[in-house]
Image (cartoon, rainbow, N blue to C red):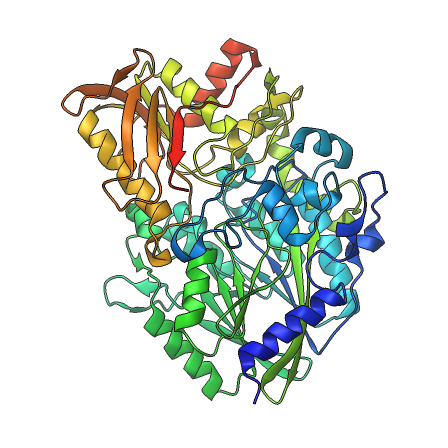
Length: 565
């Protein structure tokens, strides 16, 4: 008898041969061919259930540029596996033509020239158009938001998430889960959750005092669509109290909680769920591992690590969908559910080319309404860039190089540290840098730029700790960000080594001398999780630095030597 896994593999192959999986026909367009909205939205309706997935929007209401990572290393079993494939290797894996729309959307090569050719991506009014088109085809489609929605912009910071709630309400999601939302603080999160007309999910969100599921969030919500009983289970980011300030949400604990997830899956199956969907903010590799440890999950909608994957990935008996970030993509998944079994599926990763997809007028008006009180401040030009400013990459990005330069200069430090976060749009050479642009890469509720003394030994401990969060071979010990960005210091990292042995050859760049474990250095940084951190806000530090420079030129540095990859 054919196994469920074999059946799903056959379904994936059939989907790809029909052109209904991955990108659809837009991937085969050459660079000189004109994209159309109809082509981007084309989909052969299949089965009886449709899921729509958006995730990691990071409060980006308007169209942006967003460069995908140049380096995204996988270790252990993840080596060379999706999503740890970039650039030419990625294009070869998925049959993507150089210079094509999909090359622009999904890889980093020739980004500036392709961005000039194809334009900006995203914009929630354009996302709304795509969602409305899918609902026009299948009115009872489920729209599911993977979290990191109420964070990451000037307006989101100043409205404490209200701008995003107002806009997302217009998109009419059916459920969401959480991560950066909790950095608004427990009271504000609870206030906003209480106002939502849709489900706030997190089976792993526990009351910290009683160590039991929080009554402020639902573990799951049952839906009936296309005559199918569907359970959508939520999984918030497991490592919130480690990666973000615990003092902002002391009432809650999180964790991966495999056993709890299995209990919830068993519970919804006992209630008659024919399709079980996990709306996850675990990160892709964690989701892959969970899929092999928890039985009974049909589909995982993966978030947190910002991966845009054009075809579902099979892990155990579960298909995993990853839909990128910053409003750049929407995933549509059609499923054929019969007699409580998934008999097949079709999938399309829809790129939101904002010059091609017409914005929904109602949502566009709501977006403009949120921005209006702050428009003058946000659009003030602070400087100009001669360089491509981008963030993504395991070890550095030019935005973070600029932030580190600002910390070194404005805070008079020997060494600068900037967190390896993955959110933040890109800016093309020749563009103005506005205040909004700076906030798009720095906005958080704990943005104080500290200056402190650290010994060389302690700096090494920090570097080793962050490296293990990224390169531990067990996904359950990974937190899903990138390596801390460093200014003023060079180092060598061997990603194949165990914790405590990865970092070597730390060098103070201004002198060329090796970092002395016993010596004290002036270190500037931001985004400390410690309560009471003092210093100017990072966006003010960066703004002051750019104003002094006038025109920014950032050469990608080579102060990190990577081996063992």
